[in-house]
Length: 620
Image 1: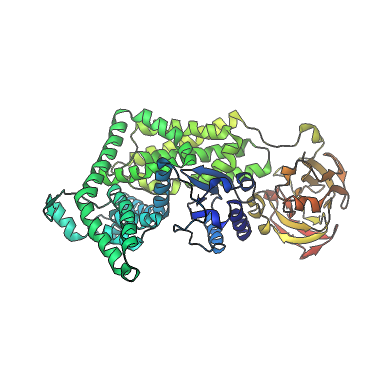
Image 2: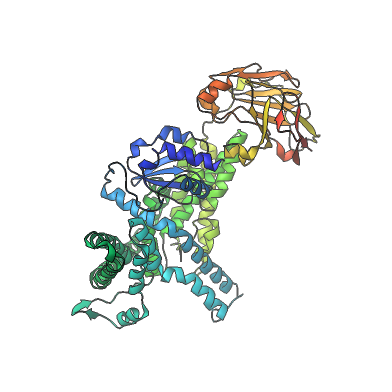
């Protein structure tokens, strides 16, 4: 994937820098706040190599990239003159969003940046719990005390971390926000409130604990942003550095202690109590509903509304019921992707299914959801069913998470609690979600683009994994420049998911056979040809990237499946200039798809090549 080019394409297709009010990223998505979402070219973005999908949630315009999103984001920032994470002055009128969309945008923008800190601290807590459970560490040792402090620190001082993130999202001074939270958590104030209600300037201050809290500081920072702007507007420029932060803190710290903190505490305790009541009285039903719809919530962005509830529940009760349901939903998405891999007869689909399925098991589901399951539709339905059935199991045994961590297999330590059976039940639920989704996907089936049965010769040789192969010389199918696969703007090729080999940037509009062998498939659109050599090497020549979308236009196949060919026989003619004018990259991968039976490929060392010249050798 050429991240620089991809970032330039995305910047152009979202309407240019002048249409961007703010941009951030999460684990898999670029998240834009656009001045006008209608200026974005959704159709072209969806078909851009390197983009897995496009969605609009909570007023945000989101471009799904996958695991390399951070690198694309960095490249995007380099191409922009504005500050990506700060509110910028839009050049046109900014479209007003409804309050619910604005709320989801605020929550997601606030929680996404702090998730690594929470997940990292949570993993440390889990490791410590496991070491103690195994008897490798005592809970009285200095090592335990230090590691526990590291793990607990991010949660205890969560209001300060949230204050920084929320202030950044609101476009206010992040250090004033941090100072506000630090004032609330100062040991003197904490000790004073632990003794009970107190007073400030004769006004009663209700005792409230701010450690590990979420809602009080979020409300306080939200209000503080407007207070800060109001003071800034009426303060002379030369005095702003002193006056604005001073007055903001003098107003907001007492206001939070007297009103916002106690109110936020009541809201937080009410939500946590409501969740506990729901799972105490209708645990199975609630778990089925949340487990079965969690992936839909992720698509809509509404899952971010659950994060404050989960964090607040852990802070108040010491555990949470929602995180295990997220875990089950992710395992189901991974299972559905693996089911596609088991069922598919397309080498590219199989490779992509397994790689994205594994990513989902690690806790990042978007590549599997958008790249595989939603693409084929039925696997996504199977994943929802798997999540619901696993949810029923989780609800039956009241499985809890004791801290926030990666919602995948690496975060399994978050289920280690006083009773080891909690972890066991969480892992069983994960297995249920994976297996159910995978099996349902396999038996429901799905439609994928495969060569028509009549196009494949019944005499096509079949190479099994037990077949003893020989070294195979691969000759160039066209004139042009030899490129490594890493430069192909499609992860299926650049990451060698489909096989190894090299690519050619063609200088002319024709392709010839690179081996002596048999044509096993010619795609309906004419952009791809499959061959098997007389020595057993299975090959794919893929002319251009995403050229399947041309539906055969500008391609003229000269052979059919089943045809015997020799090195240099004409396979295909194509109009290179017209294809490039249509906006397609003509780089052509020439790969070995049964690399499992070979050890490596060895380049002939050419950078410029002609038809029938040695391109590389496949080593048996």
